[in-house]
Image (cartoon, rainbow, N blue to C red; front, top):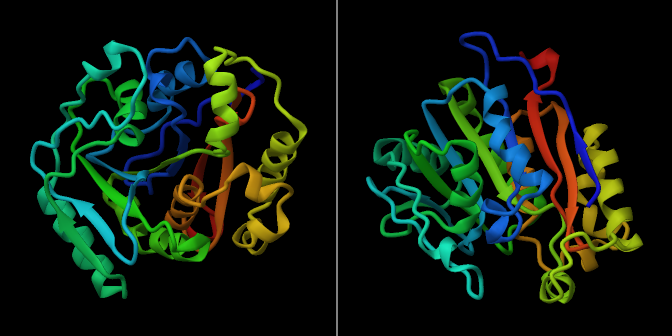
Length: 285
């Protein structure tokens, strides 16, 4: 399991724009596995100012032609997976919701041309609670979840992120939760064998390397066309939804962003757990 750690960023000064994050949440048992990704997620909040609320854009909340925004006051914890350890099904993440913030987000998105609506009885899927139970275990920060559009593509999600950018100026942390690579059929071969440390095949390594290089260079033209330009794109992402939160996180940082790779490790050979921080480029501060 290869890994890269980056020294934590210093605490932002009071009144500064919060960064946005892209988190690879991995399999549901990331929350109990002794892995570099688990260790990183347990520590990353210490490098950030404490937000007044968290907005998670989750790859597991998919709505075509609509942006859904959860508005429950007390969201339930959803165990949207099967075949894992019993203790995972007993875990709860009792963070409060933020109905007023959800209504504000929905209205702001509608004003910017999105079809958006608040929804209730949606709860926290594992793309939300698995990383947050490690990052903020006290569950005392309100959380709102925003959907991805499985047919929307990178440009739609970059635009969605830009439409959410004002949140970062209001002490709201925006987290895109997905997976840097996400070929589940090939991952399950190693999952069934318990091979979390399986070697990374060339097709997965080359894609992740290309993405990291383009993100570090803030090369939006290449990234928006990743399906045509990145090596082995379709094999690493047979469907788009797990990479789309990355584009939302980029968009929150504005038209020009500075990217910092916070973590990189690999699990089950083909699941890259790369994680990123995005800040507005200095000229936009």
